Image 1 (spheres, one colour):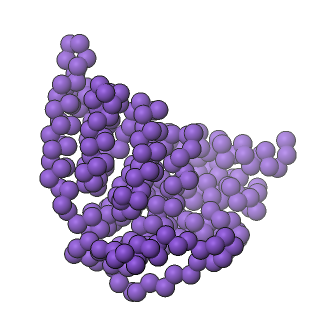
Image 2 (cartoon, rainbow, N blue to C red):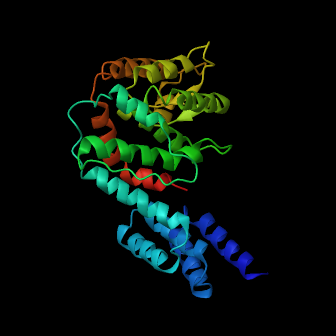
Length: 280
């Protein structure tokens, strides 16, 4: 067996153990790192386990080691960028009102740099300017991951939340996300009612629950799986859950006037760990 296959086997074994026996998974990776100290995948897997377990001190040390030993790995720079980005957002005070784009600003947004040119942006050091730019960068981190053949409801939910900022320009991507949900025939994102306040999006998701919309199974309420078991009656008709969903939608419509940047700022602050864990 080649060294590369050995490394792949050790990483695979650790992944299989991490949910049931994280200590054993860690032991496998420590052994793997001792045998193959120059293998990036082993060290990144160690970092991922520590990061997802929210052990920030050890995760930070591992990330620093990767930065020193593997500075050419794009994954390392992406990880650093997202963490830095969320820290920047956390230090901002969201604007008290939505910024209104002038026709001149809208025209500038359409003028993309030509291929092969670098895009240097100079922003005022204000929350009004920096927060939207950070949201765009965060959206870019999830965009390519979401629109693939693999299923990732959590990242797809993050994309739906972030697409609100670029509305209605982001409507085509939102419809693409809806198509994926329809193909899956189900969608689970329990933070939906915390952060989605766009009336057009709410209408589309409400439509998915109707017979005309395909009766898509949407789990958008916290602990909805438990609620389904609680409300299921003799013939399996989840009347209580349908009523909960309807009431939640009605309450959400009343929030459509909220300051969107404030909502998205809370999303970045409250879900920071989950956002980082959602990265591949």
